[in-house]
Image 1 (tube, helix red, strand yellow):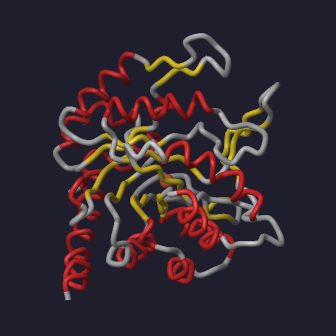
Image 2 (cartoon, helix red, strand yellow):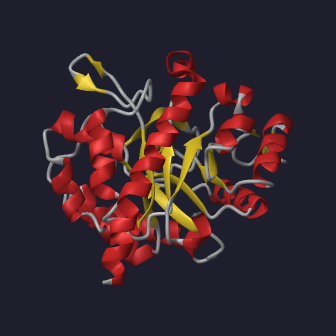
Length: 301
Ligand SMILES: [Fe+2]
């Protein structure tokens, strides 16, 4: 279970389609992941009383937090923006993590926001070049989270549909350096990795052999579909077989893993159905239960 390290938990990323059955779903998960940006109103930088959690979201979070850990998975920090770092956003996120006693919080290794004056939001997470300059930009920002030590702070490997030529580091080397120098952990999204490997023609297992898997605290699993010659991270439907294979490969190697989270988009609730969602969660639990004992016995021998 979560706090004891011995066996990772299994969770789901909440979306509005789950409102109808969240009570029953909680019987099947060890924690719930929640996107706080979908629960609060953000009136924008500089506004008085800038953030306001909507009453329905606050009630849900408090209800869940009474029986299960809640982990916050943010999408608005834009930690890789070159020209802005939204400290009030970061502090608000940490305040909510404290209030909910979250064991970890996360966002993405990417940027969506550009400009400190007339700010533009790209609405999709964009990649950054993996080089020393970006590393230097990120380390003090990450330390704002890690120095509190009240919870772990993770950054997620993102899907990218283009990459920058001539980068100093591969993504896995960059993440290794960032974790070592800033104290953050990795949220390893295996569907994002699967998608990038397909679109950019590299080996996902080779990537995993170079990533320091001891830094992985949480894993995301999801489904996606091909579109216009690309594989997309649409999160529609069940987890792909190739992603299950990557999960089976990774779980025994990630010795500090604390959670495997199923994510799906609310538009695919009809396709999956409540039973289908619980089936995905049960399969993730089966993988954890099948592979973690091997990991534990290997550590004891
Ligand atoms: Fe993800």
